Image (cartoon, rainbow, N blue to C red; front, side, top):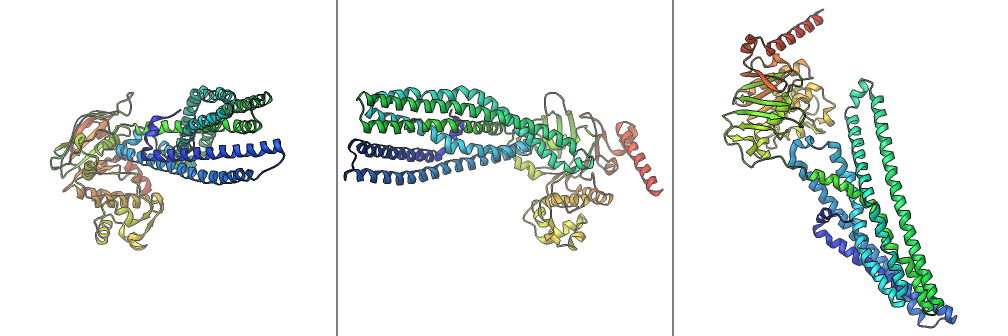
Amino acid sequence: MIKGRLISFLGSEKKYIFFEVICRWVGLLLQIAMVISIAIIVGRWISYRTFNDSLYIYIAIIFAGMAGRFATDIFAARNSYMSSHKVKELLRDKIYEKLLEIGPSYRQSVSTSQVVQVTTEGVEQLEIYFSRYLPQFFYSMVAFLTLFVTMAIFSLKVGLVLLFCVPLIPLSIMSVQKIAKRLLSKYWGVYTGLGDSFLESVQGLTTLKIYQADGIMADRMDRQAENFRKITMKVLTMQLNSITIMDFVAYGGAAAGMLTALWEYTNDRLSIIGTIAMILLAAEYFVPLRLLGSFFHIAMNGMAAADKIFDLLNKRKPARGNEKVSDITSGISLSDVSFSYDDKRAILKNIEMEFTYGRLTAIVGRSGCGKSTLAGILAGKNTGFKGDIAIGDKNQKTLSESAIKKTITYVGHDSYIFKGTVRYNLLMGRTDIDDNELKEILQQVNLWEFLKNNQGLDTFIQEGGANLSGGQRQRLAMARAIIKDTPVYIFDEATSSIDVESENIIMSIIKKMAGDKTIIVISHRLANVIDAYKIYMMQDGEVVEKGTHSTLMEKDGEYANLFLAQEKLESYRRSEIVQ
């Protein structure tokens, strides 16, 4: 009923729960004082049909108790908010820190939608656990003991009857705990699955519309939503059934206490004042535990969400060192590198490569041969590979993540352009650069003339660069990469899906950079890499050929076949355009 690891997140915030319990306990004492005062007033009226001056004292106690209850409720609510607010903030910080710790490779083990769901809805569910359930748990223990002692003063028998019924509520809670845990775990699994589908549908909406597959995806999401509705109804049914049992125990126990009090009164073992007090307190006796039962089922949802959060927080940090690259002139070398996303299929097998400093080296091959996976490993995006990678004078596994980022810049075909100005996007590469330098770099990528006719560096870019063409987006990403100014650059299909003019501009810049940088180009179009210092031809996760363009053509192997096939296809396209 208490999750130890969640409690550990409270830290100094435990004081807020303590103060809340104290406030509510003081409120209970005031409630008892009011009940006894009412019992005295009503009992004396029934016995004597008159009031005396002393009764005004009890009336004053009632009004003072009401004011005190109001104050304690406000303080309790404030402490409840403070405990849950601090923990929610801490949990979100922990999740964010874990994602930073894992780095870009986090998507190897958890989906983006799941991260969003546990960070928002999952953490919000825990608010009830900390603000309602935990304080109620401790308060219930204090409350029923306080009420028992109070009632035992008037009648031990009535107190014992009520005390006997108390354990039935926790027992009813515990009886459904295992069922609730299993059901809520399934609930969160279905919920995160629905979130995955929704995010995927939003991201791929344009493609779905183009292929008129939006109806198919809508039907799929409808089925998932219906499945989610069913599991939600099962959760609600379980909660309502459990609450019904608790209501039966609570009201039945209170009735048993009231009847016992009346029985004691009829046998002259309890005064009229004591009887009235017992009847009123019996109704109050089960309220704390009854509320605990109600909060328990809601808190169970939070605890199920906590399991998802802890799964994320338990993700192992990729093995990283703390060294920096001090000499990059020896280039980069891969020795017996293998990699797989799971144990079923190897993506890369025993890769041996060398990338010379100040040279352009190309990695080519048909789609699915492992080129981009290899680029992700070099850039530190994919972790868990076997073998060794030497970056300059250091092994990649001994480098800190920041050292890798300061040494290698990765530019993919889908480099993200952020909402904001052109200047805002460019300064992500490096902040210590003035506007004149930014303009020079934009001129290099042939983008300044376009921007100059708008608002220059203050030209507003929509989310994802939606108001730019594909070529302009890629050239802006290229400018940002140049600004970063690292000794190693990886261009992973950086010229795919753009116009010929932009492709030529980008390839020209890449070739110029090779004079004092280590350049690694991954390209589907072999015509772009014919001038490369060395070309690695990959097939099925292995290097099958290597050498310059001329030597590979002489071998008349896989590279030559692919190059000639592409050249023939491009010649055919050119002839079609001429016609």
